[in-house]
Image (cartoon, rainbow, N blue to C red; front, top):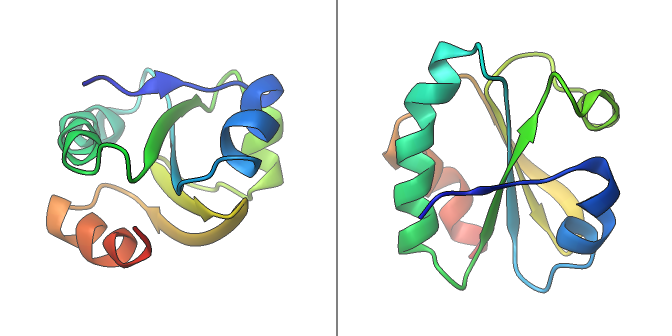
Length: 106
């Protein structure tokens, strides 16, 4: 399962109004740690199917979202529950770390 990309225009509908938690994956094409994180997020998206939505944010394109959420490093994962950002991980993290920090909200 490959995660979809989200734009600022879709943010309100896909994140704020979502009935399930949403993970935004802020990354960039040139970011090596972001590419290392991709297969882990794809695995988690499959394991958590129906419990969470996972969207990629191209930080080079969606500068307003980067600024809005104060993303200072890539990759950054932000978990939204009921439209509110409630957890954040910055930098490459192993699967177990993501599961332990985000899993309790699902």
